[in-house]
Structure formats: structure tokens, C-alpha cells
Picture 1 (cartoon, rainbow, N blue to C red):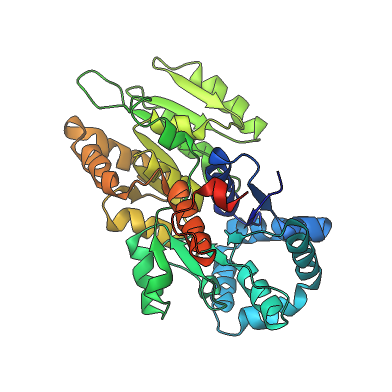
Picture 2: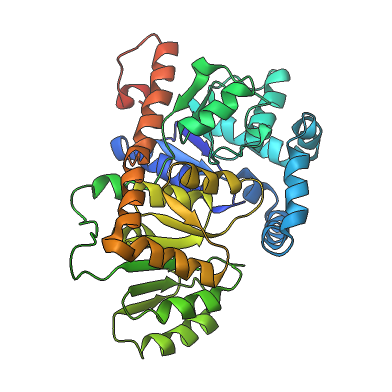
Length: 383
């Protein structure tokens, strides 16, 4: 079947691809093959895209102050207007894909696409309904809304308030939650979430991201806590994995050291607390899993709002040194876990594991209204 919903993404930060894939799964769950995820930046200029991605990762991990200035520069009113002129190859490929797929709607999880669509629209070469799925919270760059679109889907009311204050039309602003993997929705009531009952050991998940500062020191402190069960995911850092495996083998309580894994959703649902940097996907998946989060690193700009969201709602803590991480965990687990219980309770109203399906329903309702079929279902729209 020809894909009729295009979902545009770019691999600059984990949140964009995670949201795109989750949203595609929601569309395809009802009508397989109805949605297609596309990264025009990777397809049009693969070598340049890889180079820019490496520079982006180096900037956010190695020179955060410089990245803060770059993020502020992108927030200027004229940034996307001038920047889109440099995206000729991406624009040409985007137009070709739209002509080939003939989508009934387009969703973007990366903000630059809106400027490309605006340019094509001015030239009379684009008139497809287009929606932005905002993957940041609170500290939202204006590139998400300045070019305009048919609707924005935001992860929480806190972010909606920021965009309303900036002048975004409230009628086109939808608070739906962040589109997370369907694993969370499908396992509601199936995977048993851990409790701090008498005699139960706290289970701590530590996700080591590329460029995480003091990763080994933090892991060593966690593994030294014999009253906790520890799981560390270290990605593709084989050297760190070997060091931690040696330490884990000396412990009395369970410790698991994992390399790259696709089991993060299950790990979040089966641990009491996650320690990680405030990435968009990780933060939102932790919320969906009702797993309180201790943020140990914040990328200036887009990740500041993710951390603020947790702190504002009392659903976690900020601890930027290994010692602070350990202290925050001890405090949360003390007194029969009163601090941890407060965090968990705060996450309940924030969790929206069905956000992807909610967004899909909104998009299709818009398409149905345009087709004069307000009650048509997914299969009717995508026939």
C-alpha cells in the first residue's frame, strides 16, 4: 500500500526520531504501511549530514556554552528565513518525495521542515496539511512556530502556555503528550511497576549517554551502594562496560551492565528511578513509565525545559555530580521511600502513554473534515 502519511524527522537529538517512529507505529497499527518516516537531511546529503551531526554532538557535549549561544541565535526571527536558502538539496528532495507519495497529511518532528514547506507553499508547490509535533518542553525555540503550520502538538500544558504567550493560535495548539513507543500503552497493567514495599531493594537504572560527564565515577558510586539493585546501560562504550562488569561481579546484590540495548522502555517500567541526561525521548519515556528521573546532565537550550518540567512538578531532581546523584537517591529512598513516592505520584497526571494515537486521531480528523467526512475512520482516509 502506498504511504499516505509522511512523517518528517532528522537525527539531531534522540527525541525527533523517537517521536517520528512512535507516531508512525500509531498510524500503521490500524492500517499497515499507511505512514512513512523520512529524513530528508540524511537522504539528500548523507556525508554532509553525518559531518553536521558529529559537530552537533561535539558542541552539546564538549562546548555547552557555545551551543547555548548557537541555540539563542537560532531563536532570532530571521533565522529560518535566511537559513532555508541553504537547504536547496533538501527542498528539492522533499518536493520529489511529496510528488511521489501524494500524502494526505504530513507530520514533522523536526522544526526546520516548516520553513521548507512555507517556501514551497509561497511558490505554489505545496498545499498539503502539515503539523508540527513539538519534541521539547518549556524552553521551546521559536523555529517551531514562526513559519506556521496547520497545527502543533505539544507534550504538556506548560509548553502550550509558552507558545500561547508567543502568539501561537490557541485553536491550532493541542496538548496531547509526547508520542512514545506503543510499548508503554500495550504494557499498562501487564508489566508490574516496582514498589518500595518492606524488604524490597530500590532498583536504579543509570543510562550513560555519549558524552556524559563523570560516567565512570557515577557508575562506581552507584555500584558501591550494596542496598540497591543497579542496572547500567553504557551504549557502545565497551571499555566502560568491561570496567563496570568487574565491579558488578564483586557485589552482594544484583547488578546488570548492558551495552547498547533496545529494552529501555521495559527497564524504565521495572526500575524505581532512572539517572540520565535530560534528553527529550528519555525524559518523556520516563514520564510515560512513571519512573522518577534524576537528571545528571542538561544540554543548554532544548534540554533545560525538560529538566524544568520535572522539577516544576516535583517528579525528580537535578544532580550534576556523582556525589549529588548518590545523595539524591539516598534522600529519595530514606524514610521508607517517602521522597520517591512523592515523585511517583507527581508523574501520574503527567503520563500520556497513548499520545501517539491521540495525535494520529487529531491529524485524521483534520483530513476527514477537509474531505467532508467528519466521521470517517483511518482506513477510509487512507484508502
